[in-house]
Length: 383
Image 1 (cartoon, rainbow, N blue to C red):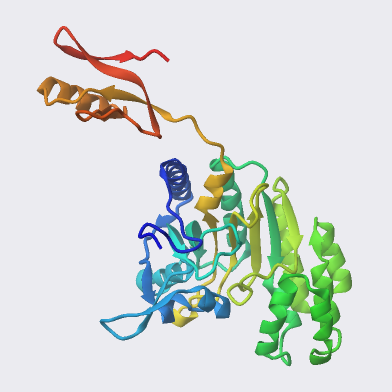
Image 2 (image 1 turned 180 degrees about the vertical axis):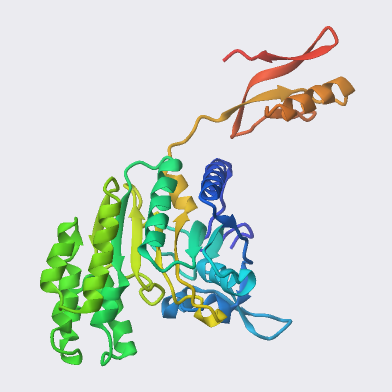
């Protein structure tokens, strides 16, 4: 195998894509700052005890692990940044009131989420800690919608779900191991598999799980859910939460998929995923996860979202390469000063090296720096 080969589902980011990703990252971090979100930068590796806090078995399977040669303890490459931000909020900042934090960085998975995706994902996200009311859920949903508009994505559909419904259906006496078997069947809307579980479930639960598989669509889903799901206070509260958020976002393109329980062990309330035409998976995911900080001694109310930057960048059209100024090689002090002055003014100046022609993909030199009567000046090149 050639030395330059990369592992399967791992790829380099080349100049054109890298520029788009970096532009999106800057835009979003600037937007988050206008909402009062403070930037944090957690490490790429840390002990698995911390990285797997409250995330369930799915995250454990997604994480690359290694042994720390200094301590002998097991470390992991982060598969998600949210547990790290929860640790920072709970253990390092240790604030008593509302805290808004944001982040941007790479995560690595043992397997790609869909066949065409990379195992190294670039995440950018925002999280709010310290408020348990729906006002926080509404803020992160509004910020997500504004974020996707800010970076130029067109039609975005946000699917809403609520983990409280599944928790109510799979409450004791249903065993946790059985609940783990049911989750993938529910996620794939496997009616046949769920029906085979009926004998191992309390009366009515299998039928309710099968009904969840068909509860997707517009606002009418919530009305139908009240009719076909068991009448219980937790389920009613979950449906009330979803209805409240839908009324608070009348202009958003919202839908409901009450069987979409990705990360149900991770979340504690409302969950959502954002989808765009042309992308197989979600471009962003988020929700409420009040219990994630329990390992760190402070199970603070928390809600937030992550946008997958590489996927978002892939949806955007190619932009015309930026114009640049070509400068000749040389060490003439006047030439060096002219180049420095242009760069201070924000211009892109590509200085040639002896014996080489410019071959920049990202910058098209539409002007040239020339010397005229001992003065260096910029002239436009013919197309």
